[in-house]
Length: 419
Image 1 (cartoon, rainbow, N blue to C red):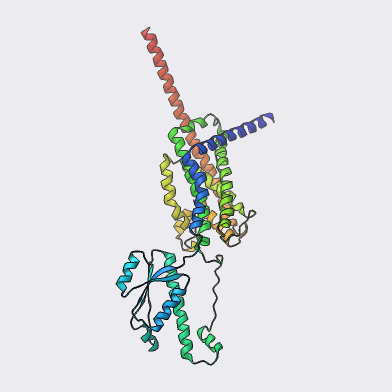
Image 2 (cartoon, rainbow, N blue to C red):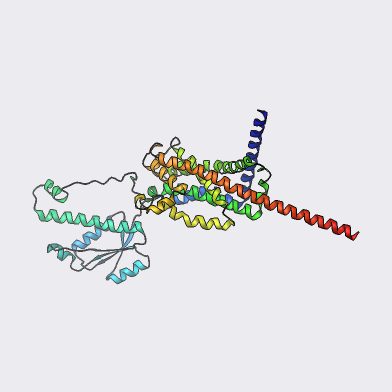
């Protein structure tokens, strides 16, 4: 019993040693501290502040009114009265309007042909040309949807005027025989921030962990700092102490940062959020999976700069394959299989369902179990690669020691021969 307690005491002592050493290296290394602490604190505020307006308003539009009629002026007035668009320029021909769009002075063109009003009162099909800058999705949506809405209103007014109905109720039935009402599920504001920010916040946790752990491993490899861990890895149990001690350090930091990201930031900027502390249990396996995944990948990092290139390259694809900005059902099966490698895939999906759709832990059981499975797989994978790394370091240290002994022996023999 005393031997068992002694081993437990030694294990805790070794874990605390690794924890303290890793925490000290994080604080002393400016790059690691920046990505592990500063970036998770600043980036969410930056993203939230950028998307805080939720929707674009007063998009600049150029008008080319070749009709110059009462009906075209009415269309322009109603179009300009919309909160989404603003008529800022008027041109006499289409080429001048295109120049303004090319210079990014305006984002779209509203064109009325000369026969616009004439065709309407002849009972012929009339056209209004809408030209949009497709490089920005939100501005295109504002310009095009406003034009459609105004055209529908004017069509309704013309129908009522030509119908010669006797009552207002007949006018209402004529204009809208079947009343339809759109309800935006899970995003009542219809804003871009509520749509994209939850997934970005969860992805930040994984990417900053990969950056911080990778930079720390790259620094250790460049400085050959792993030789300091060899003495406490005398037997196989010492390996678990190293992995658990390092992961405990990262978990303590990100337990606080994840609470800040998931519970505080959305409320600071008044984004829609339904998650609370009781339902935030999905974050625990997600953080652990990201930590062990990062530690596993860090063994492949030879230089500090490599991990920065890797994480920057994968950030946008990981957001797509998670099913946030692109429907999960539309993702090819091959890429769905690839996405299962990354903890962010299951973490983002589970968090969004709980945060926006009021899902419970039982509703995200599949993602919850997948994250715990990743925790176990990446934990043992990390132990395997750390075992190989420590054995390699020990072997290298023994070779170096034998070489030094050999040099000392040669020097002694040389001194004796000179005497």
